[in-house]
Amino acid sequence: MDIRNEQPSDIDVIRAVTQAAFAGQAHSDQSEGAIIDRLRAADVLSLSLVALEDDEIIAHAAFSPVTIGGRDCGWFGLGPVSVRPDRQGVGVGSALIRDALRRLKADGAGGLILVGDPGYYERFGFRADPRIHVDWVDPKYFQMLAFTDHVPEGEAVYHSAFQID
Image (cartoon, rainbow, N blue to C red; front, side, top):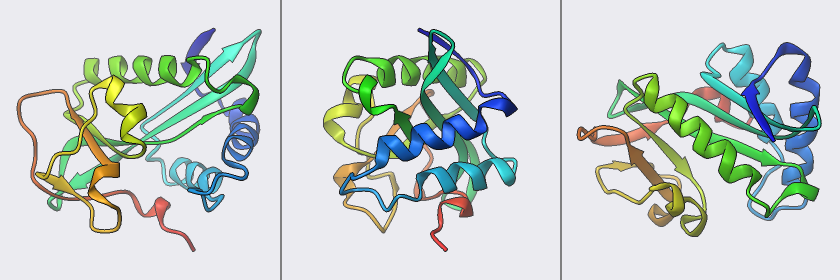
């Protein structure tokens, strides 16, 4: 498996992989592909990685800036993360996330936030922390991973691309 930055020719395939990955998921409103498109259109898709097998895209992960406590603290939001259904459960998503964590940390990011399954994301070091919160989700599903000793405090706000029309 290879991991690389998204290229313009990948956009349609990323959308298809994302739609397939979230199809029929009870926790999804099926807007994930549109969110990625809106992040890209707003030029705030800070890191967009694809995983390939035999030159075919099988997964995608999106990262965009967030504010915490009303400030840009150099933190990012993880998601959506999409793995083609026939490749789920074999470590593709984990490899993609680990590669992204390495890249973001090397680029000087302060940390990451996400809304997701604690049982899955704790393997990467994510955890709930009351210093950073969002009001619209059960706190146990809102997690963070700091890359430095400084953890900002306050409400985390994702880019408006995440708002459902």
